Length: 265
Length: 265
Image 1 (cartoon, rainbow over the protein chains, first blue to last red):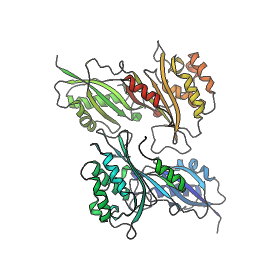
Image 2 (cartoon, rainbow over the protein chains, first blue to last red):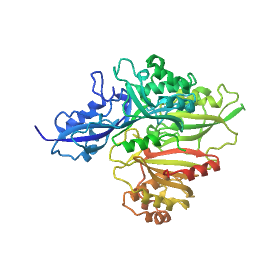
Image 3 (cartoon, rainbow over the protein chains, first blue to last red):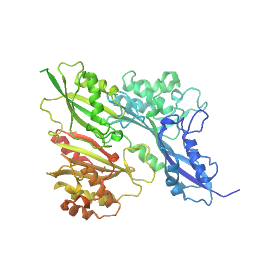
Image 4 (cartoon, one colour):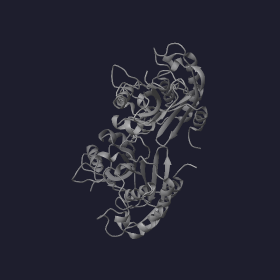
């Protein structure tokens, strides 16, 4: 067996054109374009493993990807952004590359993930935020949404926020922080947790926006969660507002960022 | 003469596709697409006047535009974003509309403007910042650039930073604040002043980046400014990194924002 080296890449992408991270038969995935670029420099297929599958249309600023390259190899890991980026489409970039231990598992070893959902909350349509937000004209009640978000924090069975058919079985997850706050014309939903069910963040944001619109009260969040009934929790927020900001492998960094997020004092 | 009402619009645009704000014969301008949309709702030509001409490729988040509409008119000024935005291309949006005094002059009455120049300063190419930044791979020295920027603050003859042939005559301008700081992967250049010469901000950023790259020393800024010689100040930074963030008509707001800008403590 040939010698290999183990590499970790940080990857950013605008998900608009893609069926999601993972290779699928029904369209172009981010994994496919990354693996095609890797194959060009490695001269053979390179299999990648990501920290989390992002859904169709969802963006990432800090997806973490594990792969193996021959050892020795003509490029150092730190050179991979420079070498791979010209081979990738405009909406996918490798941010950095580093050598990791052979046992590194980007999914199992993640201690936390930060997802951000962005609502552009103003009358006027988006310009710079096109394709990167959910545009809602009517002013949302951030205080009410924050109260509902607080009710979702902690360890719970999140079946009520799991898209149907998916993740059968164990649906207990933990949300460490769920901050909802206004920043300029946007309302940001910052969610920190180690793992999430399918469309869980978008389903939670969907309910919170119902609360922010005054269609539901913040006090409904707790009984909806307890019901474990997906039908009670309301609509799923559109994919384009969601972004995987960062995957953490250091508990202290994760705790510091989760605590520090939110509206400036 | 028919009765008219005087209206102020705030307009945002991504300048990539445009020859600039002002109507020109050699291509599409933001003013042209806005006036075409206004003509559709007014049934006649509507002339607009902006707080500042932005150059080809330069963006705006808060361009201020003055115009007149018939009185009475079928839409209230506050309704203009809702009515105009569907008539505008994706990269131009009316953010708000308000009635103003007949004497309102968006250019002459501006007490200050905030321009931001964005450099993406990392190895990897831009993803979400595509078309909205100058991408420079090598790490810039922000401390050195800040020292050079400080030398440009105050009232000076800025001929050394005025693109040739333009603004013949009086070239004395005042920079009230010039902050250079890192934010994530970006280096931001925040410039506050009442009025600027042609390409003055981009020419200043061009010199500062030479300093940040270590090609020039921060101490060169002062003698270059004093020389009034455009040839000494170095290259003009690309248009795509520049954005007119806001035009101020209230001195207190302007002073507060100019003072408050910069790296978080």
